[in-house]
Image: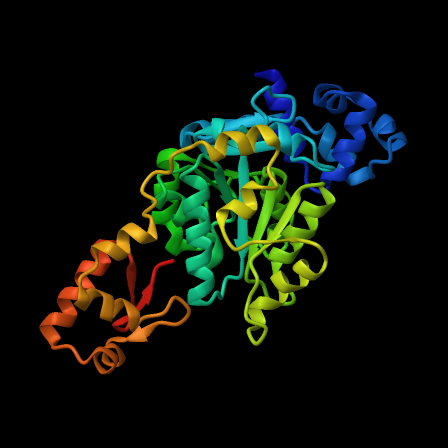
Length: 370
């Protein structure tokens, strides 16, 4: 308990950056030693007077005990950098968090994982691709890592859940503040099988500067990072760059060159990222032990297209043919394309939705699920 309290205390010192903490740890080995240093010793180690004063304050121990108490009340597991349960891959990066706040299954952090990230303002096509990739990878045993943001991140988490797999969300806020708020229900679904993590203290506001910081955790937990849509200045490109710096694989889904959201993936493909058209493209680049395991797994709830095609009657085939995966089609357009009666059309749409081959979107629009 004393050791954990020291790690928590060190993480709470205002003005003491992660780089400075790691520098101190290389000289003094443990947080306990750092917290017992005198002001002059801290000054010799390059710590400024104000920060050194906070490090030496008795109140720091009280703050750490209060933080641990809050975590316990919330059901949060605290994992320090020296804990055997700390994710091995994350421990390898240049600046690993010294403390992780974990809700849910902490064991999932050490599993074989792939991160799927992308634009918040994603196209229908991008959302479908992210969901499908996540679903097919998760159904074969890979944990899907993402950031619980709107758009591609949310689609990736949902896809993993649809595939009856595991997913982990990395927050840019305190573990008690789900952002954006509309993803609270999704967060609850994630916690049933996966985990939500953060390195920020409880109650931390989701400030804009937090998200580039948390992106190194998304890439650091993963064997590789898949980019699905990202505009020129997207935060997802930061995640891809960090993955590259961490010596992890970078994958990209090619996009329509007329779409702003295709800039990031297409740029990374030009720079050598693996082009992704299917889940096999991702698995091929995994370590041999992972690849051999994944290729022998029988996926859960993954429907073969040939079986589905055989199950469609003529009306359903006509409706399915009137839809695309790229753009939502309004029901009035479907009527014109199929020339079916209202009852025939509604029956076919319902059947196709039940078979999970199409999806209804707001405004009475429909798309194929891919």
